[in-house]
Image 1 (cartoon, rainbow, N blue to C red):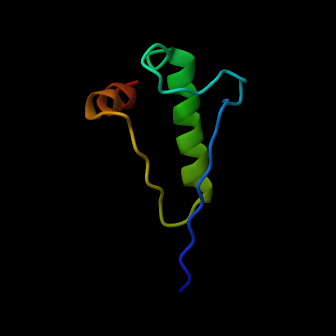
Image 2 (cartoon, rainbow, N blue to C red):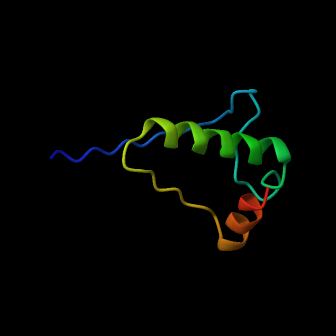
Length: 66
């Protein structure tokens, strides 16, 4: 079985809002919504799951709660 890895840089969400994990913008509801939408879309098309990294555990818990 071949192993496949795809690395992508996503700069903007579907609504054209910049996606950034900079401290100044990471609490922006539009940024969090776009990250969530991206994860849902990727998980629906990638077989066997995805790996997602967050800037910190606290940020992950905050995003997960929204």
